[in-house]
Image (cartoon, rainbow, N blue to C red):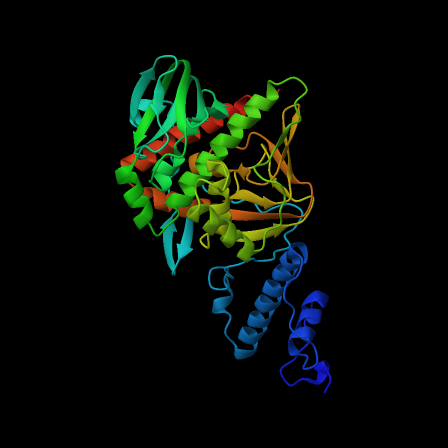
Amino acid sequence: MSDLDHPEYSPSKTPRVDHAERLMFSDEKTPINYVLSTFAKGLEIELNQALADLKAERLIKSGSTSALTPAANAIPTLELITPPKKAKLIKTHEHEENVIGGRSKARPQFIQPTTSPQEVGETVEYPDQQILFNKGDHAHHLTILLEGSVEIFDPIGNIRFAELGAGSSFGEQAVLEGGIRDASVRAIGKVKCVEIKTEALREQLNKDKGLLKQTIEGLLLQLSMCNQISKLIVTPGANLVYELLGDERLTSIQLHNKLNEAYSHPDLHALSAEQMMCLKLQSSEKLMPHWLESGTVLGSPYDDHLGSAHVIVEGSVEATCGKRTIRLGYGSVMGLAEGITGAPFSWSLIAKENLTVKAISIDKVLRSLERSNPGIRGIVRYTTSRILELQKTFRG
């Protein structure tokens, strides 16, 4: 019997899915053990689109279209969307309203940024060469560096990992995970920082069913990106490119395996805190994945902010800010601080190739923040302020 005549087989709308189905329904062929990750990634996208098309077709035939809304039709792995060249911009001013469940509901209010670290935590000063904390210590606070520099190092062999300057944050796992410090931190010259105690904050983040954890991760990631770009700008001859990891085109299974390995062997995974945060955002089922065509405009200074912030998980964006052009790759966060505060975009963002992003709904973020405690809102207010101030320096 031909595989095309198999009673369970029906042709797909996409050729590679069609080829895969022929292999699955063929009685003569042996199973496939593995495929190349690049092919698997593309096939995963096409399979999800085929499933979405099939579900929509069945719902239309049955006369039910209520389940075709984005929330009900969400596929937890990857959603293929071909938007117009100009991404839709959504105003979210306080006086606007939307309809939820037949009821008119006011949009959540923006968060006002603050430059005062006293609203966030305790301001502490350290002299030159003072240890802020040691490898193996319990993680109880997140640190934001206000003045001076610190070095991250391994006391075993005195191996230096990195040097961080004013505006940088470190000890993110204290907020997000808790546990043990995996490196030591030492002051280079006189250091002033704000230390944010995190036990109560972490408890609320772990209980939250909204987007609080993803919001804090996204903001810390956006702050790190802005700090790195600000360093590149003042470095003569520097290539203005930001990305956390190479474009590995990880499938869902590969992504989860990478995270599981990092959790199981924290001393061996060799991933930075920023890389870990990005992988977690990429794997989060609360954030919808979207595929954007090359040339799509994600935002500009002439428009209101997008209804969603974006985390790049594949491809790159050309960011033009004044006279400067910066390429943003994997791990870049765009529009989160702007969306939370209602601030305008400071740069134009255009997809330079087909782009896969994780979308963070600004309305959902603001509603989650409405229910959060003052400590979390304090971190958000101060972090957004730092991000917006750094972005002002990008214009050139």
